[in-house]
Image (spheres, rainbow over the protein chains, first blue to last red):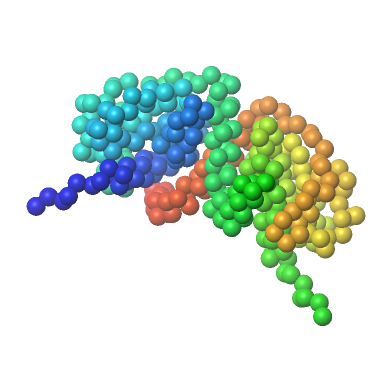
Length: 158
Length: 158
C-alpha cells in the first residue's frame, strides 16, 4: 500500500521549508515570497555573507515547472538561480544552467551549483534595500501585530 | 491618588514600542536590539525609503540617560540619531544636537528633527548588509521556529 500523493500546495510548502533551512545552514539569510520590481514574486530570495543574492524557485512537480515560462525572469534579480524540488521530481526536465536543490523531508541538499551571473552594482544596491526593508517590516509585524494591524487600518482610512 | 511609577524596564518597552510604530508610520523599516560592529546594541536601527539610517535610543528616565556616557558612539552607525523618551522625561537634560521622539501611550511624535551626518558609502553598504541579514534571519526564526532551533542546536554540537 502506497501513501496517497501529497497535494501540490502542501508539497510546495514542504520543499520551501526545506530550502529555507538549506539557506540558513549555508549562512544565507532567506526571505520568502519576495516581491520583485518586475511584478513577480520569488519563492525565496537569499542574501549570502558575501553580499550575493540567490533566488530559489520551488517546483512542486513537472506540471508546476512546465506551466511556468517566466522563471528566466528571476535571473535579473539574483547572482545565482536555483530550483528546489523534492525526490519525486524528474530532474532531467530541468535546465542544466540552473542550480538544483533537492529536498528530502525537512532537509535539502545541493545537487548542482548554479552558475554565477553577477548583478550590476546599482541593481544590487536597490535589491538589498528592498530586501532589507521588507524583512524588517515583516519582522515588525511579528513583533507588534496589533500595532501593525492598526497602522494598516489607519492608512487605508486616511 | 496617583498611579504608581512604571518600572524602568516596562517603561523602556512601552517607549520602544511607540518608537517602532513611529518608524512604521513614517515609512522607516525598524529593527530593534540591533548589534553593531563596535559591540554596542542600538535600541532601534531604522532604514528610511531614501536609504538613510536612523538610530533611536530609548531612555526610560534621567538615570538611564545620565548613566550612559556612550550614546555618541551610535553616530558612527547612522545618518541621524534620536532619543525616544516619554512625557515624564525632563527634556532639558537632553543635548540639542540629537533628535527627539516623545512617546505618549502607544504612539510617539517627532519633537525635534535630528541633524544629518551622512555615513560614508562603504560603511552604509556594510551596515545595510548587516541589517538585512539580521532582519531576514530573525524573520526566518519566527516563520520556522523548530527549524531554526534545531539548526542552532546542531551548530553548537558540530
